[in-house]
Amino acid sequence: MKTLDNKRVAILTDNGFEEVELTAPKKALEDAGAKVDIVSLQKGKVKGWDHDHWSIDLPVDVDLVEAKTEAYDALMIPGGVINPDIMRRHNEYISFAQEFLESGKPVAAICHGPQLLIETGLISGKHITSFPSIRRDIINAGGYWKDEEVVTDNGLVTSRSPEDIPAFNKKMIEEIAEGQHDPEFDSEGSVLHNR
Image (cartoon, rainbow, N blue to C red; front, top):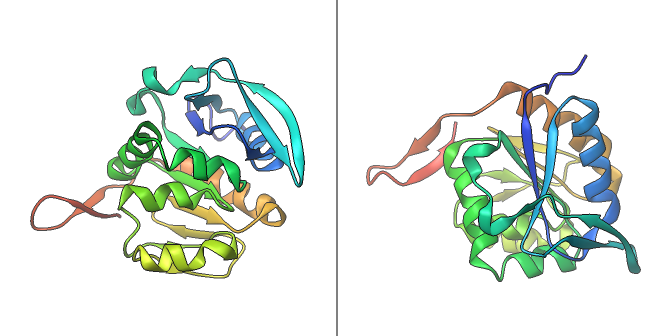
């Protein structure tokens, strides 16, 4: 059964994504019926990383400068050491991720991917996992870090490493099928959490 028919998912990435952390979730999403776009500031293609060397090039479907969050039902962020570190230095990536978190649309990030979410300022109070080396960064940003294969907090799905991909894909697809969550606001109208 194609549970994600008529759903469109953005995979936000730059050069240096961990190959399997993009290709395996992308295939799982497409197998579930979703239309998936690779969104990037890179022109034409993005280059992957495989453990300790450069690997495949993948076509960029949508230039991030032209991408609109309202065109998508969910966001997926692959990890890798290089990719999230590049993205967190560019306001375009941060703003795109921030708009998803503020809207309550599902967001899935694996391994080092949550580094980009830290930059949005919106993970305080969220239950999150990640590659262990960024645990302290998440805690310092107000997140509650858990050492589990997949952690879900009202539409936010995170996992630690490539070994967790099967659980990550399953939970990501469930959350996208479930749809948008209602954002929760504080007294000044700022987004607290997506409930």
